Length: 328
Image 1 (cartoon, rainbow, N blue to C red):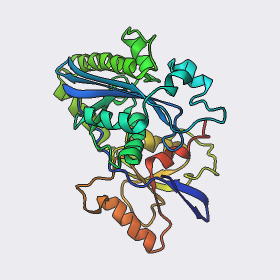
Image 2: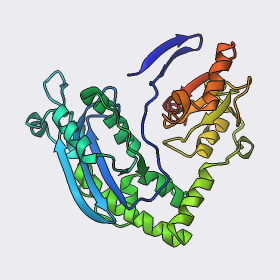
Image 3: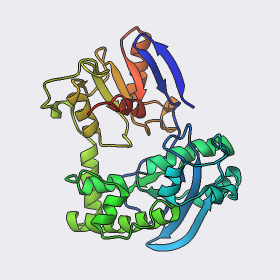
Image 4: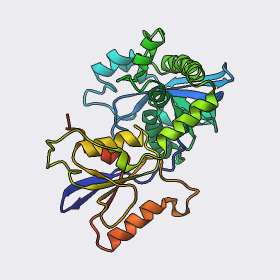
C-alpha cells in the first residue's frame, strides 16, 4: 500500500519498508528462473495474469511451473485485459476467463520456488508484483535472494544504451519470436544468462575476478568523483540545490549513475548524513532484518535530525526516480 502525506512542498508518497531478499552480485549454478505477465506496470493497480518458473541445477533443467491467473478485477465491459496486452502477450480474455484464481496458483508457485535463488531479467519488476500478491493472497512475504541478468549485462557492456531482454537476444542471436509469454521469457533469460556467464569468464579470466570487479564498481564511489557538464539547470526541480545522500544497494542502477542524475539537475551529492543533508535516498533493498530495527545508521541519524527540526527527508528509491519522470 502507498501512503500519501501532505507537507509544505506538496504531496509525497512512499511505500512501507519491504522485507525483500537481497539483490545478489553472484553468478549461481543452482537457481530458479522466473517471469510473470501482468495487466500493466503498477503492482498497486494491476494484476498478474501468468507466472512461470524453471529450476536449474548446474545447467540442467530439473523442474518447471507455469500457469495463467484469472484476475479478480475486470473492466466495465467485463474483460480482463485490453487489446494492447492481448497483442503483446498473445493471452486472450477468453483464455483468462477459464484460468484458475490467484490464491491457488500463487500458493503453488510459492511452494515451487521454495528457498531457491531467483534469477530473472529486470527481475525487480516481477518481485515487486509477487511480493504484493503473496502478501495480499497468502499473508506471506517474498524474501528470496535474487540475481538480475539486466544488472549483469550492464556490468559487462557499459557501452550499450539498452539492456532489455530483446537487446540481449539480438546480441546473442537468440529466438525472441515467442517473447512476452512467461515460460518463453524464462527460457530466453536462461539462454542469455549462460552467454553472460561465458562472457564474464572470457573478459575477466574467471567468475571470481568478474564478481570482485562488480563489487569494486558498486562500492567506494565518492561524491567528489561526480561532476556534471550541465550549466543550465531547471531551478524548479525538487533536487536542485539539495544535498543528497544514498544508502543501501539500488535496484535499478548503480549508485554512481544515480549520483550523476543528482548532479545533472543541479543537486549536491554527499557521502554522509549531516545537518546540511536534505534527502537521504534508501535503496529498495536497504531494509534488512539483521540490522536492529531494520534501519541503517544513516537512516537512524537522518530521522534524529528530522526530529530535531532539520530540513531532511528520507525517501525510498522509487520516489527518487519519480522526480526524473518529466526530465529529458
